[in-house]
Length: 286
Image (cartoon, rainbow, N blue to C red):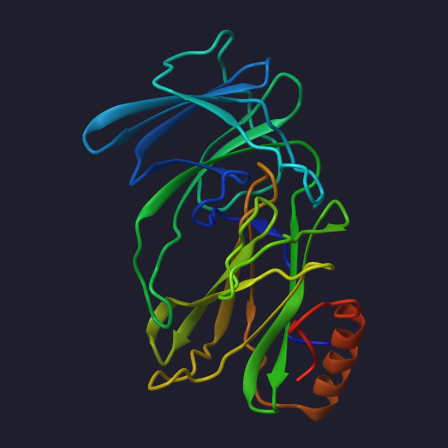
């Protein structure tokens, strides 16, 4: 066993600013949201925002493409203000469990639509609160898979590493800023929270980091940052936007605990296999 934390694939809303090709941002600080779908690949969403009722109809996208330079990722066509769709209904949801779920429907063609709501934008290194975002997804078949494991960096700092895939293919982008923010519809950042750390009790935001090309690997070390202490906690939670219009996913696991040389050797061997083919200043065993 490489680590104490097992790899899980659950669903949680997460969104990166500017991502059109992802679970779609529908509204901010939305309440009382309702979802209807039909057999023509359309969804109607109604919600309350700033004291008013808002409406949008989404169509034209399902699932995701694997990363392909020059070919846009799938994305919804949105018509705000549209108040209805023909044949509207909401079939009983029998798909995989979804976190932060507001509403979910099974469409007549067997595909699924879901609304999720969560606070994405929080200050790094201890932030607790952020604005709530309402997000829409449409998919069939398996969910994206975020696999993470824990070990140590330099024998003393907690360290996370893993990979992000969809239907067996790595998820990654092609263009990023120097700070690691994606500049295309394929790129993704992972948002990392830490529990019961020196920032305080409960879940706090640690940071975010890039899913790397070409094999969708990720890594992060819990180091001190200037005057800020290490954000090492008792548990970690990582959330990432789904590719295309698929739901977003979360991994959650325990911190690695006290350093163990044998486990570290196993984890480093695992990382050498996992990180093979990385480019640039990417992930590596530490």
